[in-house]
Length: 640
Image 1 (cartoon, one colour):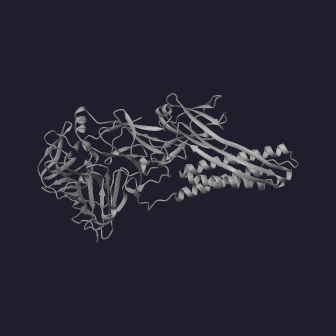
Image 2: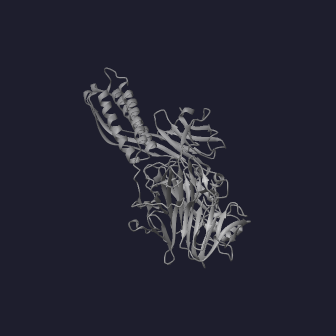
Image 3: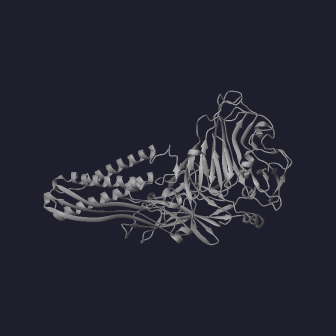
């Protein structure tokens, strides 16, 4: 897989600063602990050995805590291991400096730290084996091995309560924690995680089971708890009833494909491939529209830990997916997410479904040493060649020009052209700037991006910018487009008399456009002209095609983007947005019938699918079947 990683690195400046703070704090704490340890003027041998062993154990405790702190900030276990080993070695050096009267020396055989987080059974642990000598006391070759661990087990509990068993150093119940040692993860309106304490102190059993009240902000059915013990060790553990029962942390998404007549249409299709986007906040999207009835945010687990399963007719298997990085509230694609990063509010998990899929399960392996599944990086669908401007998803071939797209079904000769973002009669000019192949030879989809330029500006529309990105899902008969316009604040006169998000041309045959609905099914029109919000059937125009027999091309878009077509109607004080259909061309024009005058900032985008077909059209008049059902009746998803 190839990706554009231009704006990415292993660690951000913020993460580096946090790591520095963690390092300084840990070193000061450790060195202070060792320097202030009581020293007798004439220690006995056993006392000296006991004191030395205790110092080494404290160093290990701090090392495990330090390792977890770095891992929590960066998600990079290799980086965290390197810092932890360096810290452990420097800690032993400092012990030697703190006891010069003993003349100690150390031979470190091994020292390790490890974690398993965001699991129903989670831990942070470390081990050390060291041989030391206290030459001034005549003590030689003392071998000391010890471990440090904090283990957390989530238990089934009553609604609104969390039961957590906490074990120290593998066997000893930890009984010394208060509410200040427990933190619940809460997903905020700003799409970030915050840690909040339980509102009351827990009750504690002699076996180390803590019963806590789940804070009112937190979903009582699915949550993550972080435990910080008094040594500095941290552990994050995940709870849901299904996860506790199975031992595997997971979110399961059940797909409802609609009423029987809609299911019948889906089952008649063989090309109803959907690239579903799962955002960190738990929203599932299809063509920019949410299809979830509720959400469970994804915890900040390591990207490399993720897996996706689908269940079809009772059979569950792991399937390909990709974790993407985006910026600007999912408006700017950046590429494949680094596998050593943490899932954040710029990531989305993308996978494929069709009408055979009953359930999709997102799950993760919280062990810090886990390796990324090949299902997250191996290309099995695409045969792309960006140097020649060619994308191939196994069903559809795109020829990428600078910048328009020519599409055709592989093996067929008919080709169709799409151009983007005409404004006030001006078409974009791109000069020699090639589009950015953000992801090519992807796992489940490619992403292409381009920034239109308008040399000399746009007449009557100053301070205007634009962005286009396309996606090509694997084995799909369509590619998707998003055309974004950004009108910044201006003191100049601005009038938009023409705005076309996409123009699909080189079409031939019979036009057919949705012109309202009757029950669950489209009403159709074979007329040419404008289809707009004020036409007799209102705003229900989700698709339009021009075809000869079952071969042709067209546009289709979900309900939310159908409504976006009319975004300028309130500005124009008229029905201006329209689908424009002629004998050989389809245009999606948010400004068509009347001018839109405004001087305030406005950021709008239109998304949809460009469908190229040779067998299954968007709509067949004979029996109402076709790909239209994907946008008119997308599946609804419930989360467990």
